[in-house]
Length: 93
Image 1 (cartoon, helix red, strand yellow):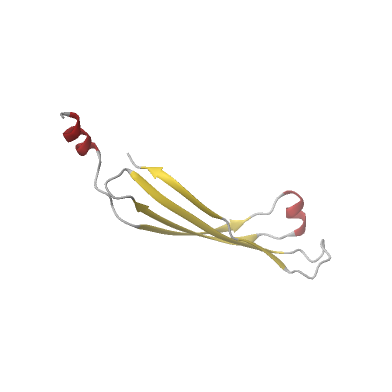
Image 2: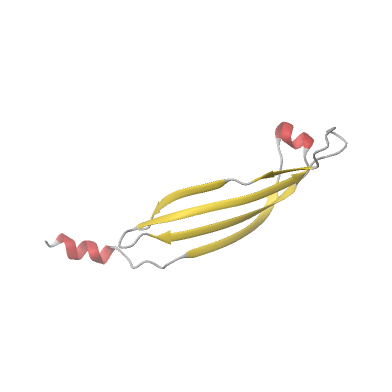
């Protein structure tokens, strides 16, 4: 029974929801880099704690777009876009 009060002191109160945004460059490499130009990416982050737990749920989403280099590729498609999504659990200590 002594361990329960000590454990309660170690677990901090949760801060609530967290949001984040980011902006960056997409740099194509390899064969993809030969066909596409530099592009842009936008990052969105959402994080929320689980009730009475040191665990957090985190979701990251990115939109990334590049345009094709018309001199190196013969195609009717003018751009490439990616929308990856990552979901993870985080442990707060």
